[in-house]
Amino acid sequence: MATSTFVAFIVGCLLIVLAQAAPHDLPVGQRPGSPANAFSFTTLRGSRFDYVPSTSTRSKSFIFSILNAETGMTQALVSDISSIKRLVLHTPENVTYVFASWGPNKDAHGRWLQTSVYNLKQNFVTAMYGLGFTSEGTRDWLNSRTVFINETLSTKTNWVNSLASAWPSVAPMAHFNGVDQSFPRLDASYDWLPNIGSLKNPPLASFMSNDCSLGEPSLNGTIAVAQLPQYSDCSVADLVYKAQNAGAVALVVYPPQNQLMSVLNCHNGTQCDYPLNIPLTMIPWGDGTLMKLMLSTGQSVQMDFFNSNSTANNFAIDRNGDIQEVGAMLYPDMQFLVWGAQTLEYILKLEHDLVANNATVIVPILSHGSLGPHNSIINFTATLPHKDILNKFGKAELEARLECGGPTDSDCPPWDRTLQLFVQCESQNSLLEIARWVTPFRRRIGHWVTDISPLVPLLYTETGTCHFQLKMNYYESHGTVQNSWVPSFNLRLSNKSGLNVGPSSIVPLFQGGFFNAQYNIRSPLSVEVPDDASKVLLVSLITGHGSDENQCAEFCVTSHEFTVNDSLYSETFLNAGTQFGCANRVAEGSIGNEYGTWLFGRNGWCDGENVRSWNVDVTDKVTPSTKLT
Image 1 (cartoon, rainbow, N blue to C red):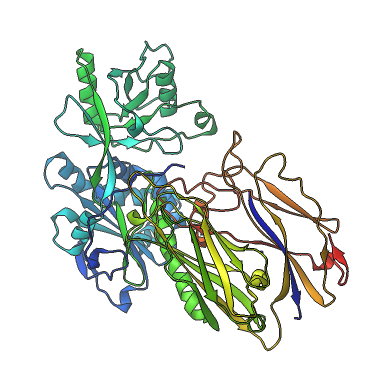
Image 2 (image 1 turned 60 degrees about the vertical axis):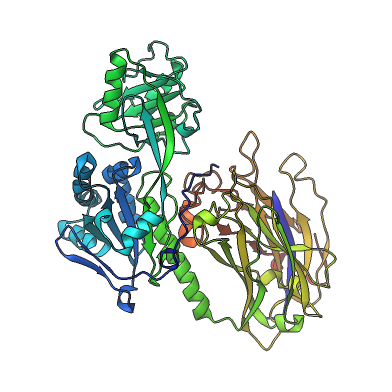
């Protein structure tokens, strides 16, 4: 556990990383943050959707979802009514969703594209009726919150077409020896089963019946192939269990006749608790039918699984009129579009609030540092106001930005890492932690403001100079990729008074350690309370990291108890291990749509977020001129 605990006295009035395609060298106009130029499209309603860069168009942001016939993700996204309901229920205000297709105008893909946007709109209507919307309410909501483009982007020559091509995404694909071309696949949810792309030298395929009986002949060492049953109580989890029980190393399924690919996940506690450890993926109906025919006639089928670059799945125009990345869609769900919109809205509100709050003093601490493969610690000095000036401010905040060495998410390091900022001014004998963050999985838009008011005495200086150390717990390169984080910090001081309103002193208490049998073995500490103390705070930064056989400390619920003069205070992290614990905090600053397992709740923290201190007012438990224990 990483823990820093202080007592502050106030005188006067506290796992998986997903692949990402790297874009080509982008011209300035196609880089995230570049102003969006004008464009125009025809909609399904027959009207024009015109975007004109002006203040009149900046009352909302636009999230673009590109439906690509060459990806399994798109097929599942179009047909999933439940995920459309989640978008309708959870979308922030001031967001419009734009849906458009990408692909050839001819062949089966082209025919599918002609109907995909139309079918998606019809599924929106079905979803909204299911949520209790009236016909008029559905029409009004769709007209104000969605745009359905009646043109295929790949046939256009505007900048939207160029951007979609220049911002590639990863498309999981498959191939077998009976077909000339590769075809899309849709893998099981990343948090349920292993990824089939990790299967090295895939063996031959064997056909498996699609009932739930466990009397299947041996599939030992082969890839099982089965059609999903159209009318049956036998779930996909049951089929995986059956294939694994028969000795298969993986299961490939395909949908019922003429149906689209759909989300592969367990759907209840019993299914999700099955002891399953083989990969699962879905392929289109036509390719699955051909494979069955080959196997039924005694032919050998050898499959390959790989990733291919495709067009962008999504992008955005924020309310400043700038194009932005939306991040990773880990599996087919409209909720990822919502999380992308929430992240844009959070950043916009934060930047607006920073201007509106108009801090009296802004002190630069670090500008565009570098944390990477050869430098996981930055030592630097900063010039701060004299302690008598700092003490006149009622609020002290640390503004942090976390960018990357290039203009896109692909220029960021892949893993989540702890960042700790330590400070030592001349009144201290050692470095002490003042703030903590956790980096996102490969996203370049970190921006947070952390209230450090109780810890301001750590910054008190007579000379005006303090030594800082920014430490990343460790850096791990991803293959040949060795990108860097680029942090910047400002100290923001506000609520100035003519009196001394800030904390007068601070006493360090405990540091964290390994969460084991010795973690709670700590000797009591006694602290002298000043005569003129009017307020006493207990301030802690607590986060749990790492894992043992019980998933502690990162994913297990822990409770942290402090006794102050025989009064017990406790902080419990109930969010740890929950399926969407951090996803539910995107609107509060946890970065959405990261390229890894960012959705799960953690033990006192989230990926891509600042760590909030736990501050407890213990004033009524102490008496001035006495000792606090």
